[in-house]
Amino acid sequence: MERNLTFSCSESRSFPVFFNSSSFLQLPGQSDSDTLSVSLSFRTWNPSGLLVYTALADGVVEVGLADGKVTVYINVTQRKNTRIDISSGSNLNDGQWHTVHLNALENYAMLTIDGDEASTVRTAIPIQITTGGTYYFGGYFLRTNTPPLQRSFQGCMQMIHVDDQLADLRAAERGLIGMFQNVSLDMCAIIDRCVPNQCEHGGRCSQTWDSFSCICNGTGYRGATCHTSVYQQSCEEVLHLGSAPGGHWVDPDGSGPLQALRVSCDLAEGTVWTSVKNNLSPQTAVVLYFTSSQRLWSPSYNPVYAVTSGADYCEQHIATPAHVPLLLNSPRRRALLPGVLVAVPTRQVTPLLGRLTQGRGSQKCAGRIIERKLPQRQAPVQL
Ligand SMILES: [Ca+2]
Image (cartoon, rainbow, N blue to C red; front, side, top):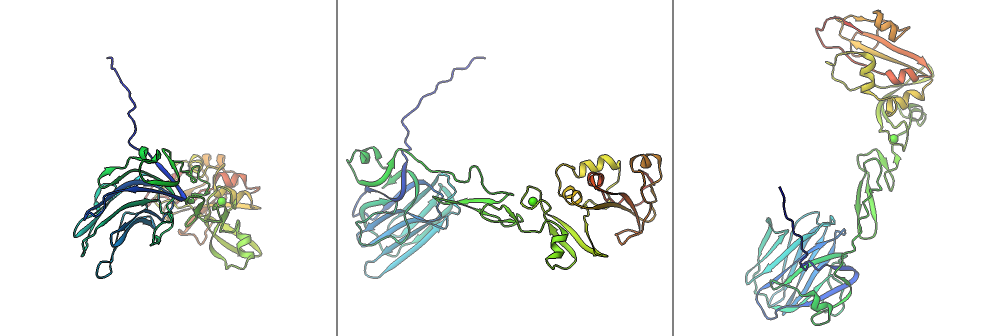
């Protein structure tokens, strides 16, 4: 089947305007009207900035970003001072395009974000407004009696509508309407400083116009890029620094990629012991010791390996319910694990426990660490 595809490029209606901290764009609108309507799309990384400012015949209207929300501030000064604040949206400084639409009629103001009715905030205006006819975009302008409270907007705008008419930015570019300062027309040079993400260990990247920062909460790392581990590398360090024996987090490769793990640090006859338990269900069956351990802990990339490979001595244990004998003397078992000790009682959770491996140099031990309880009422297992 053959299909004809036709592509064409119509003149884009999105004519972006790029604002830095000293930019503004001024556009005309209707004056002496009791209806104010302004809408635009914007994208920015900054949580705050003034998007629109217009002076009323008697008062002001400001539309801005504050903490990632669009806020509208209307002050009508006729007779008595009437101030209205409304806000909507969240996390609108995520670098994506967002649309804001403000309508103010005789007795109410309505703010909508991204055309979403659920975002619409409506409020009563007790006094009729009268438009002044001049609209400033971008926040940085000099010729006004009432300076805007919020800082300048840094980012891009497009699809600017005043009085429900798309602003003719080509005409503004040619100097036929309005005026502007330090804006770049027909381009949006916004930079994403979080791609690539410079934050390590899963740290969350957050950015403003000119910098990025890393949020390291919950990662186990700290520093500007979440590089430095908050934990000691070994139980030796933990106890040496005066911590009490017991449960501790250690990060065996420090700022390296391995995650920290929870261990028990104990001191026995002058020797520091680091104990690691797996977190498998008590119902886990030991099917084939050797391959199970490979699946469980890949020796080339795992923090347990990092712990044991740095140890002088290492051993590993398995526990079973009391009524399930551990057949450690089977031929297969002997072939895999020569010299295994059988049924060494310990303080572990179950009364019968076998020591699976032991050794110095600990490479073997590291590759084979496993500790699993057998299911209840299971027949004796040939290991
Ligand atoms: Ca690490």
